[in-house]
Structures are given as structure tokens and as C-alpha cells.
Length: 181
Image (cartoon, rainbow, N blue to C red; front, side, top):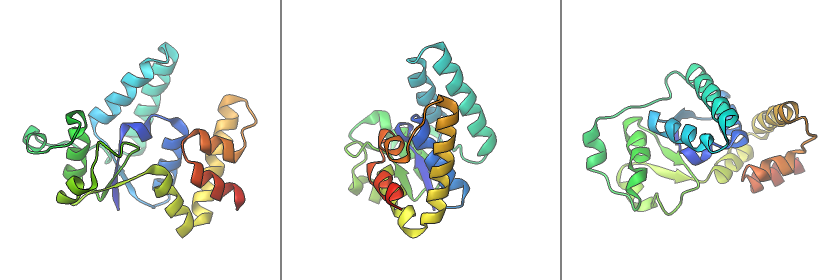
């Protein structure tokens, strides 16, 4: 399965690490575009020079770790598409160009299921998506969550606990499931 990661699921570090962690375990193939990464970098600039530098370094690492993830398309593709928010056409174009099965996003209103279905694409909320993967393979998702937790503790110097960390990453159902396991 191939999935385009919208900017809103790449930008939060913990969420990105969870998604790419399970992708690295073979759960799905992640895709994105240069524009999606650019939106992430512009959003990180609001955190100041240090946040922007960190995001640039993380984006460079992403390109190294996932060299085939970035998709491109002709401009004519976007011109034939319609979404309620034209600023999101590039995400749908990336999904079509990359032969993605779904778009992982929080933006429900911007990606109506009926319009996506016309292009053979569906939409998934990241919490529901990861929870489904956990239900199918709790050991794999739990292992990834453990790695993300360890990194959060190491980088922040704080004693994060699993449930609050995942809840902060907007993964409340996954947080409950993983913490209860």
C-alpha cells in the first residue's frame, strides 16, 4: 500500500516518526512531494532559526532515508483536479502521480471521500490508520512507539510517558491502545 503523507502529518515530529517507523517495518510505502516538504519547512520557520534549521536537517535525512518517496507530476494534472481548497490540489496530484492508495491527513473537509474515490484514492486519519496497524500487528507498532518514546526522552531530557506523548501527537486512540498493552 502506498500513502501520501500530508504536511499536517509530517510536521509534528512524533507523528512523523510513528508513521515512518511503521513504514520502515513494511506497513506501507510513504510518498510526498517537494511542495509538501516545502510547506513543512515554511511552517517550521515560525519556530525561529533553530526550528527551521532542525526541520531542514530532518527533511534532508528524510530524502536520504526515503529516496523514492518524492513524487513529481506535470502541471496539467493539477489543472484537471478540483478540491474544496485549491491549495490542497498538489496533495491529490501527488497521490495520483505516485499511484497512492490513500492520503494520510487530518484535513477531512479538504479531501472529500467522493472526490478522492473518483481518482481511486481514499483518505485516512493518522490516528485511525495507526490504530488499525496496531490492531493487525501490535508488536510492530508497539516496538516503533517504544523507539519514538526513547528518542523523545533523549532529545527533550524529559521523562515522557507513552500515553501523553502519543496524545500530544494527536494520536489519542493509539495512545490508549498502546498504553493498555
